[in-house]
Length: 419
Image (cartoon, rainbow, N blue to C red; front, side, top):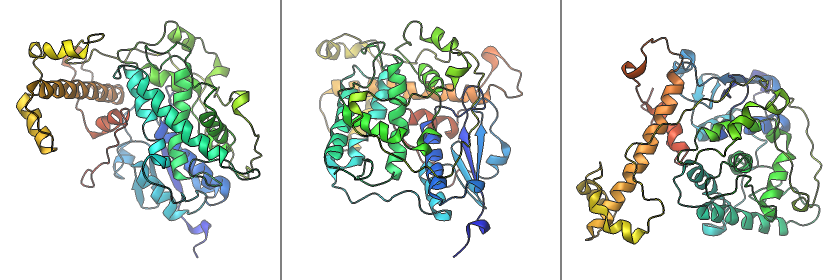
């Protein structure tokens, strides 16, 4: 058996925060760092073998990483192998340093599976923040579904059993590492009033949802999770820039700018008392704080632009809107939409349905394109080119499209032929 001393180092590359030094509010970076820290704490990965690198998205992407086939963060280099897809990163970590992460138990498929219970809440939250959703109902339903599933887990846990992880295991699984960073961001950003115009400015996950709170308490009791957390300020700034049609609550930007250096470090790890029935003792051997947190964060800048091809229908009944569809000429021809509907096995003789789908697809593509443009502008802001204003041109690539789609819950895996 190969000793750990002879194994190669693990170089993780994570997205930085606004200050370029601290960990940014990237759920994928949080997920990968959490996996690595769990392996360190369990002894599967020696702490001396883990090297953390912060990549500032506002600067040109390092050529040294591109030469390794890496074009985005998070990413990992182990020996001569490199990956920048989250699933491939965890597989590579498991290949060289197996253990620490518990395998998921066999679960029922369908609505009773942990994958289904935790699948939609993050994308629904993103829809609310961006103003894509027509109301909070889908977000509430997704969170309630998760709460109900977790509550059944808690009630089925006998006294003395381990913490109630989502798959019913005694220690975290890969699914926990994927779900918990997203759930924590929903908790922090939602409480800051960024959950949409339909929710109260001080909205938060209700204390009456003990399933979610006990699950968060489970995470907050795990050093590998808390050491991987971005600060509240980073989370709030990240989501305030994605507010879309729903501008951040009045005074939020001023509140962020007034945060002192101590608050820059603050991470919300408390839970409501009545949702915290048991205090678990954790064995946290090894794995000190591997991440230096930056203190000086520059002020927020406006990054939003008007969406292209918006259709203003807020507050209008659907029946009335359907009668006015002829007044809207979508960028996507109805014939193209009809062709793809037919290819998907959906045939309709009602041209209004085709027109409605065309407009919806147009709005979605418009939002994704604008978000990708913002990623491109951020990535190109410190390039050496001196052109400004209307003469400045941006080249969108997969590096910009992938994170833009991820904000909508769509994961795009880079094809193998991309270098």
